[in-house]
Amino acid sequence: MNRKLGIKHIVSIAVAVILVFATGITTLALNDVRDLQQRQQNIQSNINQQREILSQAQSERNYLLAEITEMDIELTELTEEYYETREQLDAVTALLYTAEDDLISAEIQRQNHYYTLRNRIRFMHENNSLTYIELLLSSSSIADFLNNMEHVNRLIEHDNSILNNLIESEERITHHRDEVARHHAEVTAITYELEAQIDDMNVMLDHRAQRIDQLEQDEAQAQAMAAILEQESQQVRLLIANAEAAAQAAADRAARSGGGSHTVTPSGAVFAWPVDGPRGVNSNFGTRTHPITGRRDFHSGIDLRAAHGAPILAAEAGTVIASEFRRGHGNTVIINHGNGVHTLYAHNSRNLVTVGQQVERGQRIALAGSTGFSTGPHLHFEVIINGQHVNPRRHLGI
Image (tube, rainbow, N blue to C red):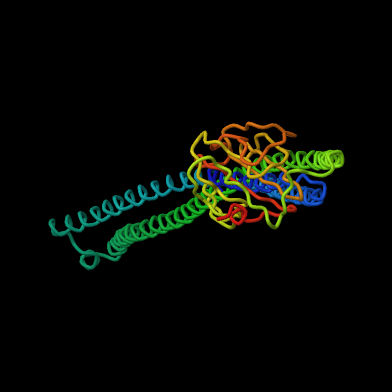
């Protein structure tokens, strides 16, 4: 995974986690604490998954580092062997050159012997010298014959010596040259083989180094994701505590007033249009392709057309239980309408209400914007009933 894909991956995970968190914070009634606790368990499961990814990446990286250490030792030994072989090859090459020079010298010597023999024969011929047989037959006595025979034997022995030296010289030099050439070919082959092994070793080392870089990126991403999840888990724990306190406070107020004056019926709630301006739906409720991550995910609300700065209106009377910036949803307002019904208004440029504030149906609670993970000004509107997201269309009369 390259760095760009890694960043995209962690962003997509973060978006998914943030969406889970953002949807979770809408259910702050006491009867929805279990849902928050379940969401916290899911976050913890994701934290454990990131820790497992981190542990596996660290284990693989440590294994690769140990393997690289062994390969470095092997590469050092191969390199030393290669340089020794190179020195041997240089020496054999020098011997081959010497053998070639010796062969040239032997050829020159053979030519000299040949010319010596040829010149002697030519001299005998040009000066009407006697042949060996004629020399013997011209003897005048036994003593002269024996003397001539000894002379002839010496001439024949000399001629044979010259011929033998010629043959022996050529055979010796040819054999020596062939041996050196064979040895040169063997050392050359070993040198090429060592070069190939060194190249292969360097390629394997490069691959392992690249893998370690990738694992280090995976570790950094897992650590970053785990840190985000830990923060979200802490916030969910805080929300659980706040939900219990808010539910108790609402119950106390209801008891003092004799019942709530702004509750709605979950099955029959019909809300006011939450944007002051032309009506229009940019993105529907349900599974869709996320405009930022490009992944298929669940869209927990609908995106309503809204110009930047357009007034955002409360869909129904209720109590503001959240008015703050949330990653993913940006500036967010959540209203508790009673009976387990909540509405959420996200991506606001500015929130106009505070937590605990009582609002009326159609009251301005924020200004439209594009904060958080957003591609342009609009209102992300959610309806949550008893902890479950429902399609806001039927509660807006569309």
